Image (cartoon, rainbow, N blue to C red; front, top):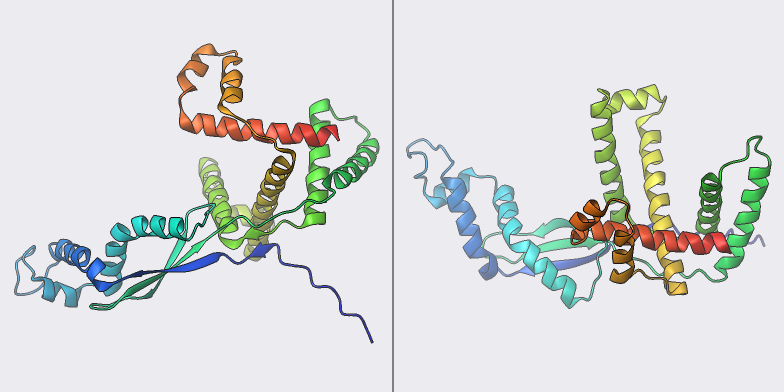
Length: 288
């Protein structure tokens, strides 16, 4: 009897989903406000603009639009409550889809979120050492010896590639989607500055739309896997960056005025935290 081939687990995994239910009594007041606001913009024969009765407006308006605008007001707070109640830890903004709605009925919304899967890197140091040997062999074949900074970059590429191959970090579909959205927004902005459309870019690079989509997806997945591996190693080795370390880095900046200006900027501190955190993990990996 032939042995069955082992099926590997997918790298992109389904999102976490849960339902949020509003009783009609919870939405009716906001529904009426939205209806009244939209009615003022309607032009209906036999009525002055801005004086269309709500019941007439309701027949003229797109029901989906009224529901969506009602939920825009009510859903954010309820979503936050549900996430807290269910003890969920979303990694990015959610996706919502309407399951059911209607006057005098419950409104049901499906929420999709991305949560970080567990990632155990058993004996990862052994894998890192193997990756560094492969990197050294590849570097030895190069005619021109790379500079120290380039050596570190090459080593880290081999290390993360080997760790991803060995441990196959899984990433929720929604997180990949958000990463692609961010990538595409940045790419469109760059192409706009070069006066190139996305279609032109795809054509110039001899890609099909399908191949380009796959390329973007792989890039996003690889970057997210790298982040998950970095976090897992930091957790295993108890690596962290506190406010004291961030302040010390700011104090050491050559541009003292810049440091003084940005010291209390939460966005700058968050970005610096991530940079120092990643550098600490990279330093560990390169030392193994």
